[in-house]
Length: 348
Image (cartoon, rainbow, N blue to C red; front, side):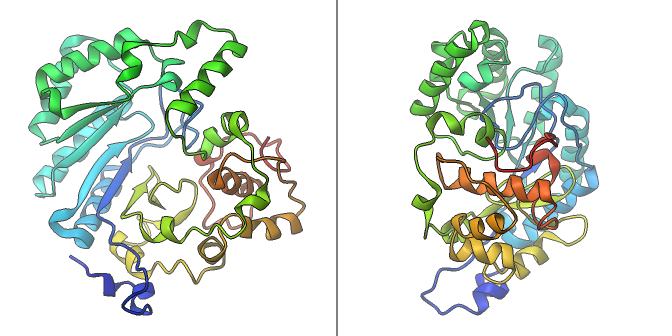
């Protein structure tokens, strides 16, 4: 297990200055492919998306986290939708078990990808045998637009029968009791339901959410975010997400690559991550997304009139940089920015 002083940034800090936290959790994104294309997606997951994590990448990520956090390491599997590639997930979990790695902390699913009760029961028993601590079902008005509520309800009943009520968590279960019927509504009606969902539960406006939802609640000009630096987000995340290609995202900041697990061990990435040194990270660390506005406008970026949040502004500018081919070692992959090649300015 590493110590805070093992990081280069931390080693330069005085005793009372904030430090980069140890990465104690890692979300392994098995795939970007998903049975849904939710408007609130932090990436751009969809049935057309791709990527499938290899066993080698998953195990290297898992072992790397253990090197950093020791017995406190917590790994969860997410996507996309992991159940689309259950066989690959099973290969990863079997290998992790053979190597004596920490048990799987949690698995996230939309509960919409399963064919019959018997197969689902077999899959859940396998996960139970692998030591899965929690099964997390994502459900809300955004998922309801793509997934049948009755199928989700049955998945949860079967899962709780096998794993127990306390190990099957639903985000957000209140929506199961009062579905909106959004799948059958006209677009104008959908907009009202989505607005209500945003008012009820917070949303991080990155990925598709920045492009399809943020405009519904955007009220603030970019200048309102002047001085809103990202020090807390960069230093205090306590974990990473690792995509199917091995790209490492710090905390929940999708589409900004710290490094790649297939090129550099995770423990080395943590040791050498200095958010106040590299140009792109330094701007976010010192000034936040508003600091990126100057370089973007120098390249003819046109900001939107209003933004919903600091993350919305950041994603808008990064999408512009992605289309321009700027900061290519950090801004990517395309799965976080969609495939709309017609953009030449900010997101609309």
